[in-house]
Image 1 (cartoon, helix red, strand yellow):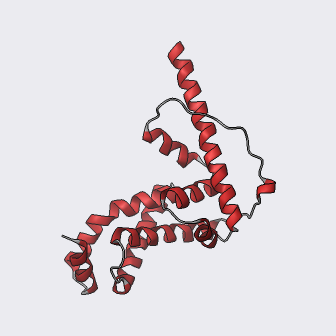
Image 2: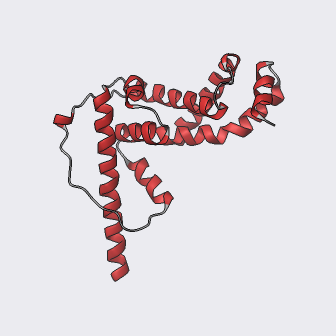
Image 3: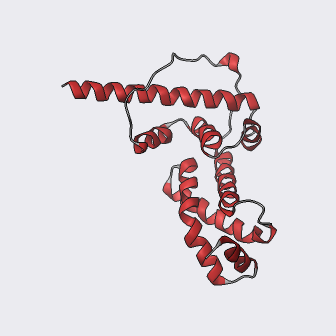
Length: 181
C-alpha cells in the first residue's frame, strides 16, 4: 500500500492502516534507534515511543515531504530526548582540541566492520557523527538538539572522523600483519 493511503487510513483511525504503517516503518525506526542508543532494550522502547508520537501527530502531517524522513526525524528526536535525560553534553572549542596526526586507509573494509567501529565511538562523538553525516542535520540543528554550541558540534565531528581514521588504521595494520604471517 502506498504512503498516501496509509496516511489517510491512519488519519481516519483505521487499525489496518496502523498495522501497515508499523510493518513498513518499524525496521527503519529500529535501525535509527540502534544507531543512537546501542542498547536493544532502550532502542525497542524508543521505537514504541516513536510509533506513539507518530500516531498522535499523524493528523498534523501535511504530506509535504517523504513520510520516512518525517518518521526518521521523530525517531531521532525520541532518542536524543532519552540521551539528554541521562547525560549532559559539554561545550568545547577548537582551541581546546588538539588534532592527533592524520591516517590513510588503503585496504577495503566491510561495511559491518565500519558500523562496529562507529558503535564503539564515545557517545557524543557517535551522536554528532550520526546526526551530521548519516541523518544530514546541520551543525546549527545539532547544536540546538544537544544543547551545545555550533562550534562544539564541528569539533565533535572532527574528533569522530579522527577516531574512525585511527581505528581503521589500527585495523588495516593488524590485517597486514596477519597476512604476512
